[in-house]
Amino acid sequence: MRDDWTLQNLPFLVEFGESSRMRTKPKILVVEDQESILALMLFALRQAGFEVVAAQTAVEGLRIDHEDPVDLIALDFDLQDASQ
Image (cartoon, rainbow, N blue to C red; front, side, top):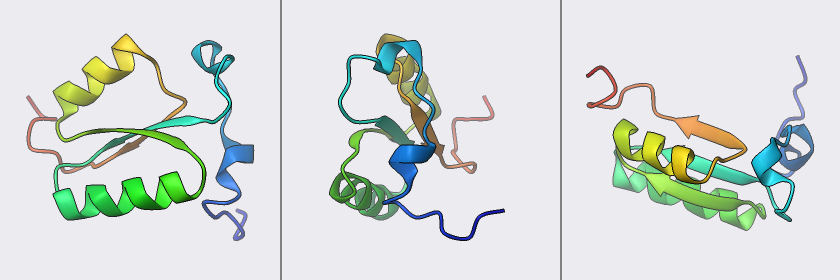
């Protein structure tokens, strides 16, 4: 396992899907229901040069990815609506 993985290295680690071929930056979907954590993740990823979209529920995240597929999803495993 590599120990030098950082936000700066992540663009080289993302494998691009068909939908991302026209993009200049990898697109990341952050699904997080706690606003403070979501804000921090959005700030850090945007500062690192990523295109970032956000959702606060699993259902919203699925809708966003279905409408415009992303390259990577950062998912909160403890979402309230994810088990429904």
